[in-house]
Amino acid sequence: MGIDTERDIEANLQIGPTDLGMVRIFIEAQGIEIPMDFDPEEAEDIAEEIRAAAQAARALKR
Image 1 (cartoon, helix red, strand yellow):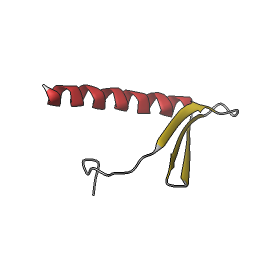
Image 2 (cartoon, helix red, strand yellow):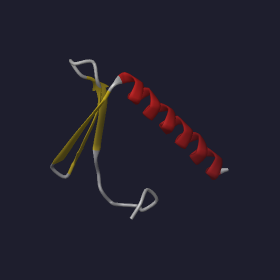
Image 3 (cartoon, one colour):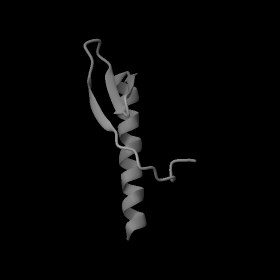
Image 4 (cartoon, one colour):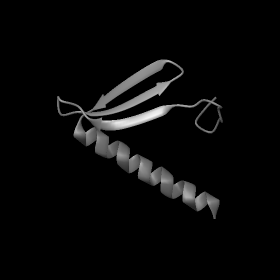
């Protein structure tokens, strides 16, 4: 199993700031809740990784 393995699982994703100044990525699927908190700098690094992955995915579709 890995990032390229397809799964038939639905999940909800929420992203927002916490009252402590962190950025929370919250995932809920099949009764499991996963809150992940990051400081703003880490969140910006994650956002850059997501943008890079989106760009790479677009290149593969062409």
